Amino acid sequence: MLQASQSGMAESIRKATRSPYSHVGVIEVGKDGVFVVEAISPVSRTPFEKWRRRGRGGHLTVMRPRVSPEQAAAAVAAARAELGKPYDVRYGWGDDHIYCSELVVKAFERGAGVTYGERVRLDTLELGSFERSLAAKLGVPLSQEVVPPGSLASDPKLEVVFSDVVVAP
Image 1 (cartoon, helix red, strand yellow):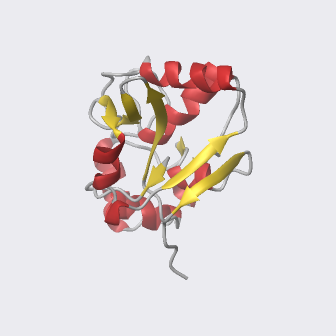
Image 2 (cartoon, helix red, strand yellow; image 1 turned 90 degrees about the vertical axis):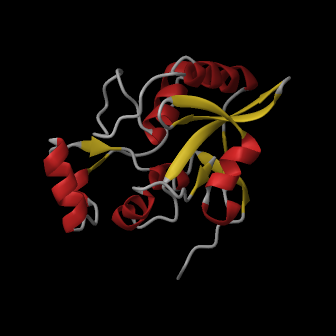
């Protein structure tokens, strides 16, 4: 599930990646309701309606992986195994901290054995002076690779099942 969040870095993420999306999580449907397992600070299991309200205008896109029900359950379990982990403000690929699209990618790789999204180097994104200076301040090399939320949205192995996101021309 993807959205344009209203976090402090959301606009920078959308501009840098030329995507309407800045946040992503894994949907979990359980006996106790519908949740989004998401990497915020810390990784949390957020009730769906609360998650939706945090997006710009409540808009979202739901994508379905082409996996078996067992693989989907394993991916959700892998995402839940990250609960409580701190958010990665440096967007690294380690396992001590985690950012939103990294959580989704790792959950499906580790739980379902499938890979989604594309890694891109930071220096290939549309980074403005603010983003470049922030990266320097945090010690993040621009040669570092990240998986932006928009790369999940454009992955042909994922099927859009619902979207009310308006994409500007």
